[in-house]
Image (tube, rainbow, N blue to C red; front, side):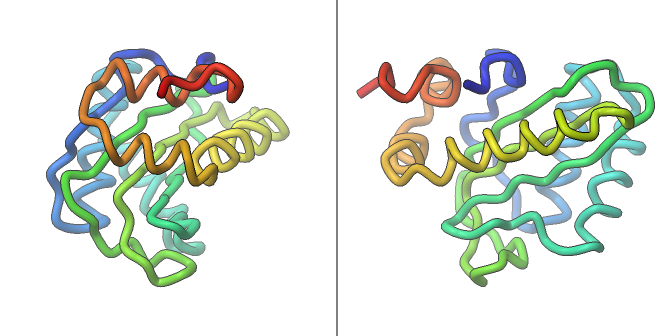
Length: 153
């Protein structure tokens, strides 16, 4: 379940970007707006993490993430891209589904568990297909936050 990470207003149903950097900038801006954090700090944290290795995990999915000092809980944003972009993914495929995950600096195991949960949900082929097939923010939120046995058709 991702309901504790993802608020209904943290869904971007059609993000229009042309590059990985632009996607990260847009996500940082939205995260700053929703969480009351510094946009530049979020963006720099994400870029720093990408320098260690791409967070493009394959199958058109990226899970950029980072830890911030001024955040007090795990926080996510989901974006469905208007069109695929190169994200330097592990399988070299372009990305069109992005889940941004931000965590407090001290959230060691919780951060890793949240990353694993996000990856598990997005890697499910049926869920990914449904996410790609809708532009409705409420439907996207429901797909990401409902238990697997109650997924919206």
